Amino acid sequence: MGAVRSQRVRNLLQLGKADSAIEILRGREERSYGSPLCVLQAQAQWLTRDLEGARATIATGLRELQDPGSLLTLHVLTSCVDQLAGAGPTNKAAIQEMRQTRKRFGDVPQVLRYDLNRMSLVEDAWCAKEGENMLADLTEKISDSRLALYPLLGSDLALRFGANRVKLMIRLARVVDLGTDSGKAARELTKVLVNWEKQTGVLSRYRAAPEMQALIPNLPLIQDREGLPAEVTAALLGCFRERSDARSDQILYEEMEVGNRGTP
Image 1 (cartoon, rainbow, N blue to C red):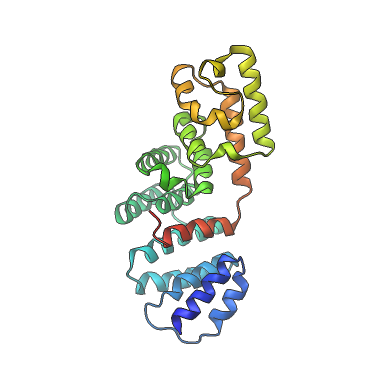
Image 2: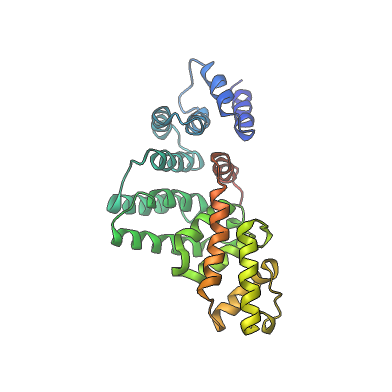
């Protein structure tokens, strides 16, 4: 019966019906020790903005559950709740938690999301720089195929790195398939590239049409030999920002579930 209930709750969360999932969970007065429903309940509470309830459920799950996947999800949820509440470990304490979480769970995309959430509460300049270095190192260690499953995470990372780490930003643009975007920011990037081509002919030299879809795979070569004008870098960041601004809790939940399914 527990497995059936868990699947019903999971299905509702996948459909964006967190309120209905909460109703089903409330119908179960007693729960066995270490029940996997803890994770689903914490997710539903986070999605419905019951932050105090989510904290209590997460605390129960961290005491009772043992499988690494569930524990990592609960840690990520903790960072999501703290980010929403604007409360949690800051500066050196946040950096220490980032180190501990990576040591415990390894080089996986979910740890990147945890780290990004923790970084949102870091204000000290030294800690911010240290945290960014940790993010960059971890991003480098995760394969393109794994990062491709987390397009919102990739966009958020690119915005965090910005023009300070152009090569990494270019890699993320390729990995999250930024070249398929067709919004206002993508049109602006195309316009910037057309102007760049008219002035220098740089794109033609690398056999890349002055359009976004053709540009992305060629940017690493161009960047190594020519450098990117500030206008191009800014336009690229605009594309990432447009995608990030379209975020929703549902997208964050879906990316969280990619890790729960054990996708390589």
